[in-house]
Amino acid sequence: MTKKNDQGTIENPQRRQFLGATAAIGALGAAGASGTGLLMGSRPTAAAQGSNGYSVPLGELDDYYGFWSGGHSGEVRILGVPSMREIMRIAVFNFDSATGWGQTNESKRVLGSDFINGDTHHVHLSYVNGTYDGRFAFTNDKLNTRVARIRLDVMKTDKITHIPNVQAIHGINPQRWPRTEYLLAAGEMIAPLPNDGRHMDEPEHYWTLLSSLDAETMEIRWQLWVDGNMDNLVTDYTGKYAGASCYNSERGMTLAEKMGSERDWAVFFNIPAIEAAVAAGDYTTIGDSRIPVVDGRGADKGGSKYTLYVPIPRSPHGINATPDKKYVVVSGKLSPTVSVVEWSKVDDWFNGKISDPRDTIVAEPEVGLGPLHTTFDGRGDAYTSLFLDSQVVKWNIDDAIRAYKGEQVNYIRQKLDVHYQVGHIMASMCETVEADGRWLVSLNKFSKDRFIPAGPLRPENDQLIDISGAQMKLVHDGPTYPEPHDSLMVRRDLINPIAIWKRDDPFFAETVAMARADGVNLEQDNKVIRDGNKVRVYMTSVAPSFGLDHFRVKLGDEVTVVVTNLDNIEDLSHGFALVNYGVNFEISAHQTASATFIADKPGVYWYYCSWFCHALHMEMAGRMMVEA
Ligand code: K7E
Ligand code: CUA
Image (tube, rainbow, N blue to C red):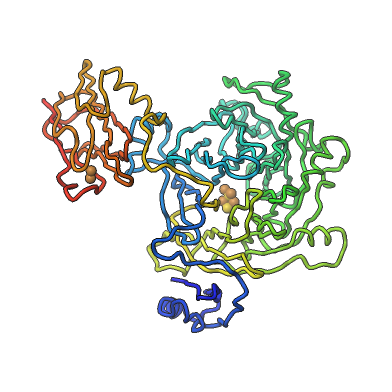
């Protein structure tokens, strides 16, 4: 309900300033745009602060595509920014009852059959020259150790790769320069290597690996054996280096063991050196896996040919590259500091020009309690989320570098309360060279009193902050279903999805080939093909009818229903839903989709269209007759 006024400003509606939560909700709701002065503790603000239009007028479109991870929902979501409207959910690792993801043959070919859940933390898009090329999004599955690719033209997942030899993929990052040819994926939890039951009680056998995937095929090209664990991951703007944070340099098994050291590290990877080792055969393999594994351990010596271990206080978490291509910021989590590493000094270390890994650090500002992630506005300022302080702190990178050299400068620009316990923060376009400093999203883990209570499980609170002016301005509370860890805001002109499927789309090419082998032309035929006890039912859909108003099968048949939507109209999706058989899937304009099931119950079963498509949508139905 929070709105800005005509000058584009709004008083920060901080609940902490309110005397009574209930009264505050009422005041906020009733006050609307001009009445924010009614709020306890608020005062008028300067119109000069912040220039973004927050409300998106009816009928107008958002400026940014927001890509939100869905955490343990296993999905990826698209929000419009700045409206914060949820526009679409993209099923990735999860079963989706609405679209039939996890049930259609087309989605099962992507998903495999092992799991119907996942835990997505990070979404990143493919790059060309340090900005987005609009082709792919990538996300991780911490739960079942996978990575997935989403095609941005149709907003569907098209590849899922399980990563062997490691457990829990957490950080991922695509190559940013000159274009995304590889995707890096960090294994978080150390586990016995190989994990065959022999070394369960011997922590010295516990390790994790970095994996590099070919972004076109999503096949794993190599893995790198590292010390410690890996948490978050970042690539640089040359294509040469990448880095990961480590919160368990101790390689501990228990909480106390993991927190033993005052410093853990950020580990930096020399990608060309690793690829040269793979080309030269300088690697091992693990268990049945044929993936080349290069040995990048050596933290005790500061690193190796392939790795540089930079000591960082303490259990660091976020690791983010600045849009000016120069620095990478590692957020200290249990230390009130963030460490600023200069990429060119990482290069110097690998080239022997400096020897102390700590000499790659050019600043270590103290920013507040519980720094988790850092983001950038492209104007030289950084913003770090403070989990324990429940704040976003804005600080200046150049001033922090001067302070590290001993100058007396205040690098802190502002601290803004957020509600509450913030994890990731992300500014618009901040993971590219085109960071534009307009919006920042604060993904808060707790919403506490911000929304009407809906049971013991509360939503999280994704807050929108205007960062276009000198001061950050909080403008919106957005409840989200658990758990968006991370988000990206991508300029609208960089994303160009299609409105109607192309008939030769690879997503359903195998189904089209099956029809062709059956002599069926999907664009016109409605046919039932029997092949032993396998029955393939081909039908079209044109609002408001399916091409077949009934079909007959025999009890025990394996039935594959293939539906092709011939409607030529944007936004006209049908669904095929079969009563008491648990079948339901989406067929959007010009799409072909199919599902296979056993006809294990005799009698008549209605199928109906599940997407409201026409005035006669209710009549869009037919009967499956199962002969006993
Ligand atoms: Cu910080 Cu999994 Cu990126 Cu959550 S991670 S906050
Ligand atoms: Cu077709 Cu509803």
